[in-house]
Amino acid sequence: MAEALGIEHLTDLSSSEAVWAFFTPLIIFAVFFVLQIILPARRVTGYVKDRETGEPRNYRLNGLLVFVIAHIVWAFEIGGLPRDWFYRSSLWAVVGGTVFCAIFAVWSVFTQPKGEIANPWLALWEGRSQELQLFNNRIDIKMWWYVVGGTMLSLNALSGAAWHHGQFGDDANPGIYLYAAFWAFYTFDYFIWERVQLYTYDLIHEHIGFKLWWGGLVAYGWLFILPLWGMAAHPDPGYSTGLTYLWLIGVSVLFLGGWTIGRGANLQKYTFKRWPDRKFLWVEPSYIEAGERKILTSGWWGVARHFNYLGEGILAISFALVFLHPGNLWAWTYSIFVISFFTVRQRFDERECEQKYGPEKWAEYQERVPYRIFPKIY
Image (cartoon, rainbow, N blue to C red; front, side, top):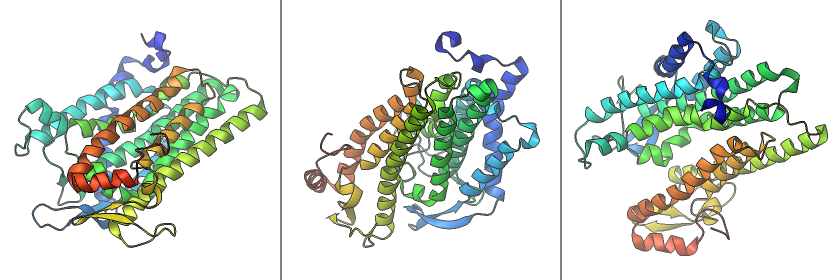
């Protein structure tokens, strides 16, 4: 089956290597957990309020430091870890990571009081508690997920590029290197703005169940580079130098356009939540008052109700086109997932927002901003 899918190179491990690959995620989880506890961090308050005190929760943020250290260790092969290991171990790592996430989910769900979900399987999937901080609040599980997931996403992409270079040398596809650079930039930018994550939907509303354990660690860290599983095995497609550069420059512009929309929209929302009356990029905030809450209607959020999702969709398309093999289905796997995911998710978001702000106020926002994701189209 692997040969038919074009990923037989990911099954070329010895028995001992397969065992190490299976346990690689657990080792990574443990190392990152310890690093986040022992490394210096800045203390900040978030959006979520402590249920006991009613005050905003405190978080220790050191994701950027962990990210940099992990990349130095990888780049210099400290400890003897080959640069291409994360890529070569991908299949077994996903299996092992899934197993360990299931174990952690059982612990995090069934050690908590029963909530509104009576079905234990559904409770395991969705979770019971919204927050989980350990060691006297030195580490927050949700933020740990994103430090592990974001760092491993970058390292897995770079590892795939390293494997590709080792296989093809001078005949390597430059699009593979640019693909890895895209993800390294994307995740580095995330850690620059790590505090913004404290004001996102997952941190505020989601519960700690298998869905987020697996999504934050395995899907984010290992499966977001799924296109590379198939595409790293393809050499340079052989276009002229001029056409190759023109193509990659165009894809880079597309990538930066998507990043600008996504990052800009999220930063505006973050700014508005912290300082409701502050201008964002010289734009005066306008909003609809819904009791004690406010619905932002200016800037990016006056263009479409989920405009940040458009940015993610554009990014996803650039990730597909960068490989210089637009006819290969592997190149489009991440794009298909992301566009489908956000198209469905925005409908759930709409229902959540209607409950949060009230049907009347949400209808007023829908009337003022009629488009969901794509202005003038959808």
